[in-house]
Amino acid sequence: MPGKGQRARAAIVEVASDLFYRQGYGATSYADIAVRTGFGKGNIHYYFNSKEELLKAVAEMRMEKYRKLLEQWSLECGPPYDCLERIVSLFEKNAGDLAKYGCPIGTLNDELGKNNPELQEEARQMMDIFLRWLEARFRALLPPDEARDHAEQLLAMAQGAALLAHAYRDPGLVKRQADAARHWLSKICENEPHA
Amino acid sequence: MPGKGQRARAAIVEVASDLFYRQGYGATSYADIAVRTGFGKGNIHYYFNSKEELLKAVAEMRMEKYRKLLEQWSLECGPPYDCLERIVSLFEKNAGDLAKYGCPIGTLNDELGKNNPELQEEARQMMDIFLRWLEARFRALLPPDEARDHAEQLLAMAQGAALLAHAYRDPGLVKRQADAARHWLSKICENEPHA
DNA sequence: GTCTATAATACGATAGAC
DNA sequence: GTCTATCGTATTATAGAC
Picture 1: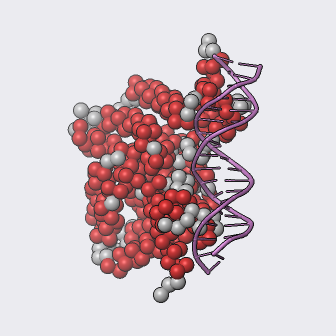
Picture 2: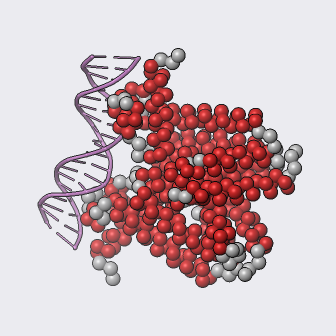
Picture 3: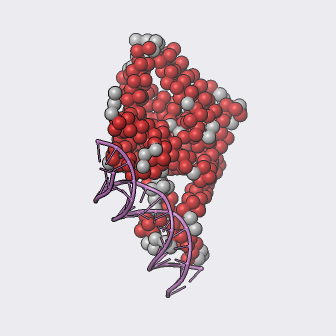
């Protein structure tokens, strides 16, 4: 059983992750987090000495989740198309939140990329988890350099769809882009037979 | 000849636009703008009563530029492929800045979308100028609903490419995505002959 | 009309109470 | 070890000097 401190830390990280997603990192204050956790405003500093440290903890927590999910999928997935399509479906399933808040990974990269190169590295690592996973899947279908290329393309489609859906507040944009991505995927999978 | 006030306003808007792009809207303070313009810190308020008003002026200025550019292209462009390809080339030409700061339109939508719905409408209008222009070009090739779909797709590719290039600080990502977009465009243009 | 000194507030961080 | 009262700074915005 984890101690009181551990549970407090985890609770703060969970709340911070949610607020960083919905409001952005810069626009989220210690006060916001304090209200939602019930801790005193300044108290959060006891658990996390700085806001940057807090973001790093949030990033670690999220990456843990992403890694577990994708690892699971690597085991479960059958043919490459089914495996790759699953990530398209994940995006589509979250269309509502994407239209409201954008992609949790993409928006964080955007925000931190402008002013905080050090912290952006954390955000980029989140992106990289997905890019590498996609690349590995495409390697079952394509030569290495093309696999990398295709992984970038699919990720770009997803990020672009999320950004536009967010800009227009239209979940339908994600759905339409998901269909386009599936069409694109199916063409690749039929042209290049499983190695 | 424009009066002193007019020139001052224009100078402030120009500097603000640049800083909003490179640092983000939230991270840019009146002090930053004051330093770069040579005006006193608080003086900017004489010309723009609030930061929101300043952003609106920046948005208007940018949109004027975009509209003029695209209107010019509409006149000059020959076949639909050449016309559409030109926007891909524009993106590619700016690969360096895209990798450093992201897309000026996309990043602004992302930032304002989280916390400032009213201001985001300005940013979305910038996006819409390009979306509508693309849609009009695709109408020369495709039925109306597909034209809209394809415009969204091309814009999503561009935004996704910019976001990833920014995340990875890699202009090459824009180049590779531009090539992919050209390939995609050429297929559409050969399949569907000019109406 | 143009600009500057100053106010009011919210932020992240600290020092020290329990 | 846990939490709270407080500090210094930076922000936008204003009041009023030139």
